[in-house]
Length: 333
Image (cartoon, rainbow, N blue to C red; front, side, top):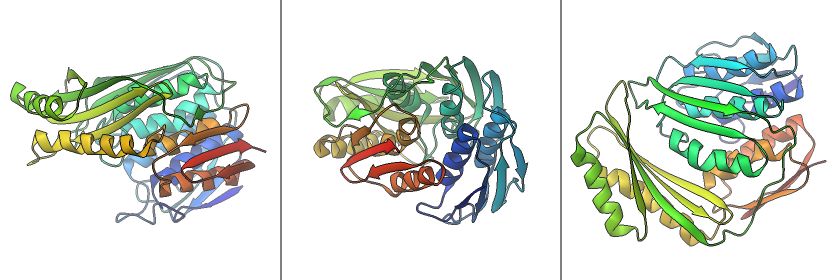
């Protein structure tokens, strides 16, 4: 059994999600203690528990001690990951994209088609938005040989939730390594403004600011059904090497100008860095890169604690050699 100290590194949900993903893929049982010890509210919350149970369903894993508030649990796979049709409901506004990322690579590596629907939040702080998954994460996986389509037909904003993330994956048993050291030329720059239950003036305020301050940006509007009102802006920069994404999220009392500026400020910082991937994709590439046929390398504007944490968790399950800095280099031994 692999033993994981959940307080390591960023000390949050990423330790849990990466651990159960790798346990499902490798068949190695895992015990995690000090679950989310680095958070103000330690232990498994509904979003994390849904990710654990989703991974368990793929491989028939036996769970011991896993419940809301648990600070220790074990996960013991009983068979290989099985492709199929799956549905999961977080039951809160917790992040559906994070649950999707927990199980997508295990399902892809089966080489067989699967379809998944997850109910929950789609635009959450400290998590990738559904737009980001669709326009940044999915294209990166497709370049690695994973045939995947991600969509979000319904938005889920905090606190109402009720959004839906869906994905279809039809293979990826043999993955290509990541090669994203140079950014290359900009092919297109888009800003996706998502709103639910809000007047047109909210969209227009974000549009005007972005058109004034972001040369060459193409504005896309997505008005989605939702259980409650909400808004978000996601800027996607598509370069020759791939895409990077930057989000601003609405909140009560927060102007749409501020939401747009949040996304724009992140984009400008990344643009000045010269890195080929954004800091969030930098750690999200680790899991698929572990199963690629060769050495992967990508540049990031900053080697975050999330990146270092996921590499540490990965090293507990598989033998790897890696370097972390402005350039991340990773290969299996």
